[in-house]
Length: 117
Image (cartoon, rainbow, N blue to C red):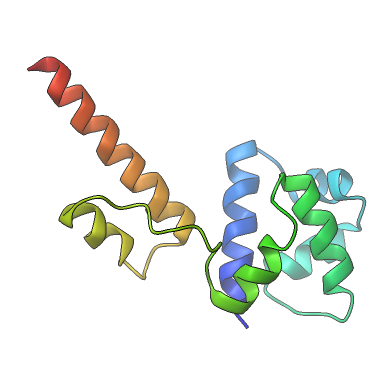
């Protein structure tokens, strides 16, 4: 099980939204301790209930958290279109969310360069 990968995905989405652990706990209707345990990658028996609530709060499709736990990925196809993006995608030192963000940044820079001519 990929507990740290799940924690990284949750933390990245919280950061994107500017949420604290308390914000996520309130949105999910769970205790702050349960959110803390997920973010510290500490599995507990109640994870299925808490994870389902967190998925809803974060706007994830049902089952996304379980898929991340089992495979280490959201299950979305790799978002690269060329060699440079493939290199970024294979950077295992980055979370999936960080890799996607970096690829999107690279694409934005390319579009700006094309516009500048």
